[in-house]
Length: 135
Image 1 (spheres, one colour):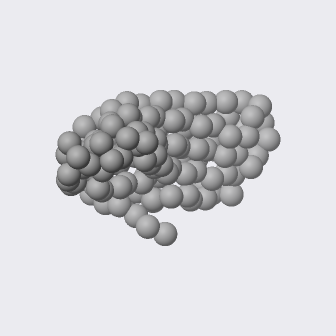
Image 2 (cartoon, rainbow, N blue to C red):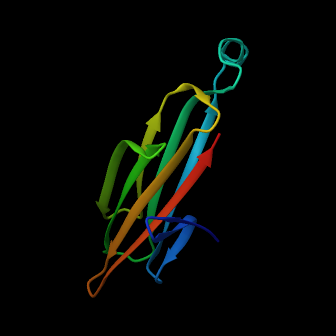
């Protein structure tokens, strides 16, 4: 399993098990821009990217549990936004944060973090996951 250390806190990257009651995950997805040739002409050291999307998911394996996920997308350490999803009576919560840069200069870094919670009748479980990509 990959992990990132930021401010002394270790965050699992990708997907993890949350005790025996569920799973949590965070992934970053990148969509290439259809204007790639014109962007390369304007900014030769930039990557043509139409969308960077962070998706955080909490999946419950326990019926009658409450659960949620909060996902934040950051660019070079600055927050671009946070989304939250919670539910009872469904198995998966999904929080998606998107950014539409057009082009991304070399050296930029996106980080995504998610905080997952799962509550049963007896306990509350929490976990953090994350992902990152550097251009």
